[in-house]
Picture 1: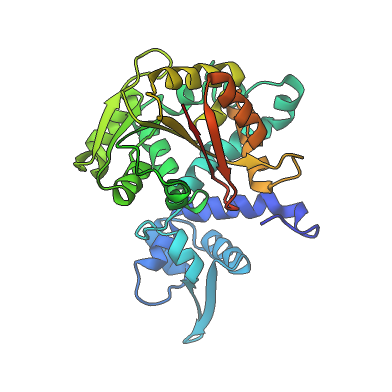
Picture 2: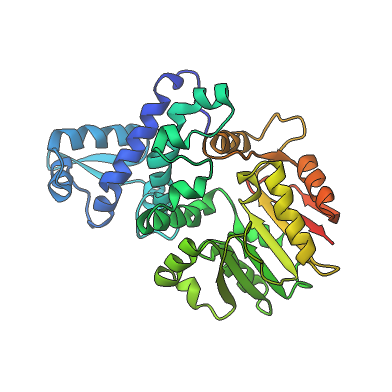
Length: 339
């Protein structure tokens, strides 16, 4: 939610407080205990300073992330419904990995936003010491970082409703679906549920596929097959429908056209591409979430968020026709284009 003017002065501290409470495991510690806990008990469990823990937890009460009550003349705390649902590891709707990525990467690189605006280029080198304008060179530097990024992508359900992406258009004519840059296969699993007769291929970089096959259950789904390769360098699998979810926005126009033309060439007549991205209004007056993602793209990549007209122009330039776009009011909208 956009902060009111009285909150602007400390909005960044609110975010840092949230990130810190998640990093230290405050909400998980409370979730694992059947009764409310004192700050001292939480501090003992986490190995943190008692006074510092109490001050942090009190701030979380002010943020409506914790509830405080008095029991036997002692102040004790418990999670709110919101923090229990979204800020604990055991919850299927947990966004902890997304918040960890925001804390370790987005929040850090945001300090270079002024430089990004002045220079017109990504800030990976200044923020992380990675001499590359490719976001993936930054986040795939080790297996641990790769796993962290994959889990971040998986936890974006609260931003992008995958069921809406899959169900916006009738995709039953497409028997083989290839999710390019499909990461751990979370979107592929939604496709497999919605269209059980389809065969889904998840195509991603070797660093990603190798981690997924070691770590994630989606690699064992009989409807889903993983294939590794570099989209720009290697052949892509044959498919009736290609999916680009949160991929196009990573690249400038020339790279987008290279991707789309390669897909068009691989498509048979009647085949197509499904794009899932944040879409800006034609007058660029919103939505705010798309603008914030656009700022993130400016910091990390040479890509950007676009209007439907801009996507339509790219798709037409690549050769696609019959381009469909339905606004559902989500941060992630679906665009379908056919050959």
